Image (tube, rainbow, N blue to C red):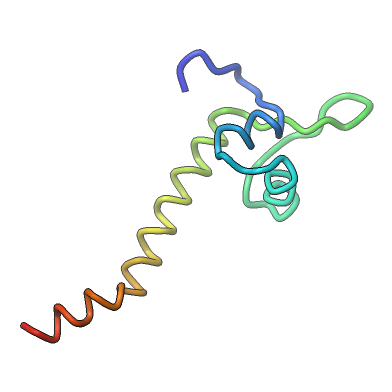
Length: 81
């Protein structure tokens, strides 16, 4: 994410992940995505490195899910061998 500021708003994160700000807020509140609250109004910010960490964890989690839940065609191919 070259040229990205150190901290991103939830709207910025939503744009990067192609989802809604409400979904990003829910991810933060569930502890899936680390964020900080700043200022008197408690605005949320996500450090760019934390977003990259989240994305890496999501890829790993997806790999594990795919390994544990093979696609039906994969099972059929394995049975044919």
